[in-house]
Length: 116
Image (tube, rainbow, N blue to C red):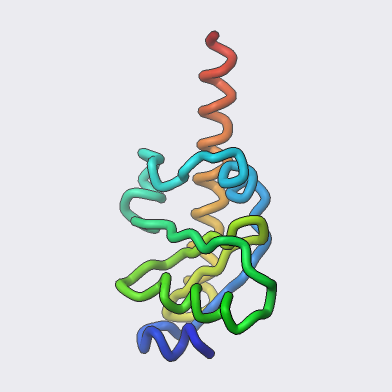
């Protein structure tokens, strides 16, 4: 409920465990620095919330605070991600964009390492 209270335009919230985005985060890479269209123009900014107990009020409040200002996706470090949209389908699309960007970023990093 905290998310819906924080933003009146939110009609859908989706949480998922996004392995590629989490792997990059755990390795210290910032998906926000990606030049991909999905990140620059669709997601714009990916907020991060430090590890907090799943289902806790503290986690709910941190996510709600993170989406103020139009943020669409919040990466829950060591856990998953939350996306918001006008409806659940739009929110799910933002999570897909996050995970596809993370996959592409991982492939880019692997290609760069292979050049060395």
